[in-house]
Length: 468
Image 1: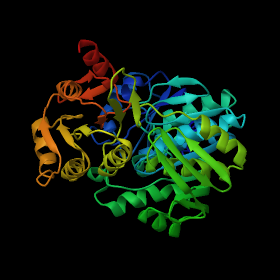
Image 2: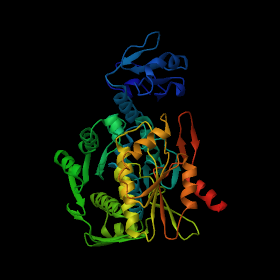
Image 3: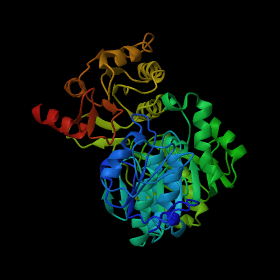
Image 4: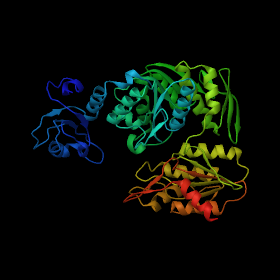
């Protein structure tokens, strides 16, 4: 393939065998894209890319000492997205692409939509936090939204596998960092916006503006207008929007019943039964229903599929155990997420609500005391522990959490080691308790200062139970 075919206006007749933005992955004849990242600058690896056989370099400034052509662009990430789209022959133009953005609920919504579309006889690709899928085939994922090169490659594989739809989680980072440039969205969806990623965006206003970018590039949209930011996004949306909510919106949930094993409600002449508890499950279902109605899926198919849908790993996931108490794993790692899951559990728990939680290191510190306050208010017992401390000291993160627990109604203990915290919670469980292990969800690892270790809460829980 010629460079001119994948990067417009270069005027260079150069043969390229592929694209790489990691110099370690460069192969003979590749074009190397030098990206200025947050941890390192790809421009310093230009010479290494040349030594590995790169035919040319796309970069933001001239790289000293290299003899192969350097094509200067204003933004390497934008250029990479354009090149990836062209290299893989614009795969999203051959798919009905659905994008879901928001702070909470994205993963569950994508799984619900996949279930509905498959009930309708479609073959569906999925890209998200837990994993990537082509039909029933699963692939590991490193981040919520892959870099543009891997993203277009995935879409290309979906096209080859005869997928008709692709549904993906669209992170605010991906919208700001041009990872999803060139994607042709049929439907874009907004779930909600609560405090998260302010270490990257700085303010909630910036965070909202990042999310709203999705509605500049999709043909149809669905927006939760019960969320205060939903109305702001709606005002500036450049597409046909279907609004939804419990309190407001064109599509509403009515006659809601909250059960220990799910929710029931009426919506647009449908009787919806979803086996995932909590008010947040009503919103997730409403998002999925709205998306599928924008895709022209019938009410009968939607209601039938939701009635069969199961929960998602790490989202209000009940762990099987032959005990007189309940163990539940949830990904809640934001103030709103923690509040949602604890309120839901409070609604059906016959005994105590026990919260085992921490906060991630190298992330927005202001949410730590807020999460401490929420847990202290909604739980009966809090076990404050470590999450993914990254480069920070776990004890300092815990200290920030405890700053919000001065007026805590709940009892609380601090057990820094997460495995020990899990063991403590289980060994001190009482009849009818519901123990919520919050923050890790689907993750099977823990990120420490100097390494990442294997850590799957399901395995830890099983090990503790076996020793009782």
